[in-house]
Image 1 (cartoon, rainbow, N blue to C red):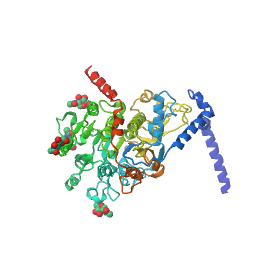
Image 2 (cartoon, helix red, strand yellow; image 1 turned 90 degrees about the vertical axis):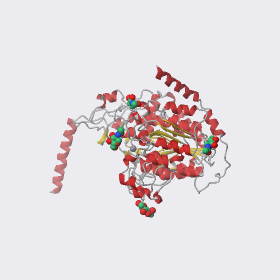
Image 3 (cartoon, rainbow, N blue to C red; image 1 turned 180 degrees about the vertical axis):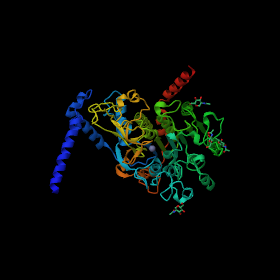
Image 4 (cartoon, rainbow, N blue to C red; image 1 turned 135 degrees about the vertical axis):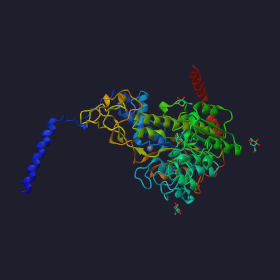
Amino acid sequence: MWPTVLIALQIVTHVICHEDAATTPKPKKVLETVMNPAYIPAEEKHGSYWKKSAASTLKSKLKEKTNKNKARNGILFIGDGMSLATVMAARTYAGQLDRGLGEENILEFEKFPVTGLARTYCLDAQVPDSACTATSYLTGVKTKYGVIGLDGNVTRGSCHSQLHKGNWAPSIGQWAIENGLDVGLVTTTRVTHASPAGMYAHVSERNWESDVDVPAECLTLGCRDIAYQLVMDNPGRQFKVILGGGRREFLPNVTGFGNNTGKRVDGVDLTELWHVDKLQKNVSHQYVTDRLELLKVYNSDDLPEYLLGLFNTDHMAYHLKAEDEPTLEEMVEVAIKMLSRNPKGYFLFVEGGRIDHAHHDSLAYLALDETVEYAKAVRKARSLTDESETLIVVSSDHAHTMTVAGYPSRGNDILGVVDTTNGGDGRPYTTISYANGKAASIDTDGLRVDVTKEKGFTERSLDYAYPSLVPLDSETHGGEDVAVFALGPWQHLFTASYDQSVVPHLMAYAMCLTDDQHQNCHQPERLTEAASSAVSVYPYQLLLAQAVISIISCLL
Ligand SMILES: *[C@@H]1O[C@H](CO)[C@@H](O)[C@H](O)[C@H]1NC(C)=O
Ligand SMILES: *[C@@H]1O[C@H](CO)[C@@H](O)[C@H](O)[C@H]1NC(C)=O
Ligand SMILES: *[C@@H]1O[C@H](CO)[C@@H](O)[C@H](O)[C@H]1NC(C)=O
Ligand SMILES: *[C@@H]1O[C@H](CO)[C@@H](O)[C@H](O)[C@H]1NC(C)=O
Ligand SMILES: [Zn+2]
């Protein structure tokens, strides 16, 4: 009897399904997609093109020599939230701005000879945040979610764990200073934000950026906020150059300061204490707050020994929205000029920090533009340094949920809708979408939004939020590995797949910052001429001209 019932059920199911299929439009099968590119470059249609291109790649690979020099300088670039999908979309976007099809474009760091993959999880989290990952790639120690500069023997937000020095994880910035190198940090976020804080802070709670954020009982016990640690404690107070946003974390909460009103309730102006500290050390120093002031310092005959630049009260503005703020590229150029004066070398940390923020708001356009700006900063650093003595590592702290999906044709607008098929619901869909985020793809009527009817999308607003499946206030990080790109001494160490916490150890080994010394660690120190001439050949007249234009446009 049971078999009969089952067969009957199958027949019923078949009939229902068949009727369903008959009443809804049959979606085009995606695998039958016919591509429709505007054009394909003629040379690419010949097999010989690809064979030649592969042969030339092979030739340059065979020419590569193992570089086991001492890395006098090390620069670590982190694109916050720069997943591999972000890299692909950004290169395509930049290529399309350049009037190419896009896909064939290459970002500067993608030209580096060595790549690896880094696993990003935290001690207690499958998908990490920027605090535990900063601890990982700057101190070489994996720790818990939300924690900076402390090992895993920590309870998030516990002042006792923070004060116990046995828990402290010093950063590669500190190792560099202990070896006589100069150290700097550059970011587009608040300089007290999680990633840069990994360079100098030991905090059990990443949100303790100013004293107003620290619970009263923790302040009483002697736990200090991140801004305070940067200015008053080592290694932060030894940094030669600090550039980014976040003025409000340094300034007191008093009215009458104009736009300089800060968040601090301890009445302390940390920018003033920074000044006093440098006075006491009898060292030249300068504090700047906008682009023109920074360029003036850059072009002056005697650079100060110490430079603090806080260009926004909060994070620096997105590059496409910024006014009076330097670009990441300009900040990197100034930092390298500052740091190149030390014959023992330097360590520089650079963060393109707002790729992440744009993604959190599902603002793909801005995320891609910030990635392109980041690549420009890498290009600048490469042009100002010499790969025989400077190791440049470019990576990301964690991924995001943005995907590049569908089967769009070659050259299809990366920020547009897929040109070849609609969704099964008959509506167009964007190539870029998010797994979760603030712009739900399902509308109140239960149907998927038609983006082509949204003004923000059709007018390509910077603030257009790309649709996502799971509605959340803020789009989340992703858990997959991030790429690591390396160029310079010991670049070959960065190949393969490893934990993110390995990155600073490899850099420190190349730079001879640890007890584990390689054969070239005891080369005599070189004069700084190579470095300083590399800087001075750059046409800073260009920057000067830009500054003059800005002044003139102000006057008009
Ligand atoms: C772990 O941290 C606590 C403070 O929170 C400290 O008392 C303890 O000694 C630490 N344990 C180790 C093994 O360092
Ligand atoms: C100062 O801080 C208090 C308490 O956090 C806040 O209510 C007030 O708005 C702040 N004042 C200014 C000028 O920011
Ligand atoms: C503060 O900033 C706002 C917006 O940037 C500007 O309109 C205003 O004039 C500024 N106020 C002062 C006192 O500088
Ligand atoms: C401070 O530095 C200047 C220039 O380097 C030097 O001439 C002066 O003697 C120093 N002053 C003190 C108190 O060390
Ligand atoms: Zn984030």
